[in-house]
Length: 151
Image 1 (cartoon, helix red, strand yellow):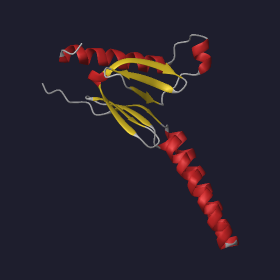
Image 2 (image 1 turned 180 degrees about the vertical axis):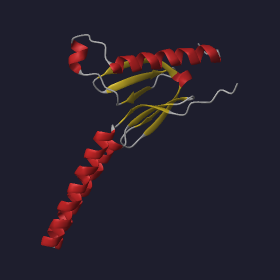
Image 3 (image 1 turned 30 degrees about the vertical axis):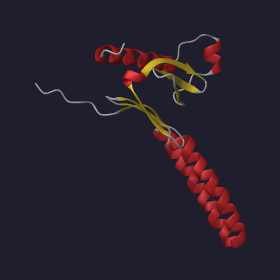
């Protein structure tokens, strides 16, 4: 019997609908830039700079962020940064409004911005999917440390 190794599993990435609407917004921005260039090249240049900044911001905030589970650990891709946290380093995790904070065995804190827990859920002490993900991260980290003998 052959057991296949499962590939990376996304915990968070923008949904198809979010991706489609974001691409639509970027297309609208490009149309505005084209219309501004038709009106005047210098106005078009100013609008193009603002449009490029806005399109980049949309890409960084919506299309790029991703949290992926691999056999080796957690890969967190944020707006500009990518961080990989091995399972043996994951010690404690907490879900909050800013995302999931991962406390590592070496003392560093890593923030996975998605999934998030709303402040209302925190105030009402409600269990959310972000809490479930944080608990899974902790459990998987503890299992990895026990199996490697660094518990």
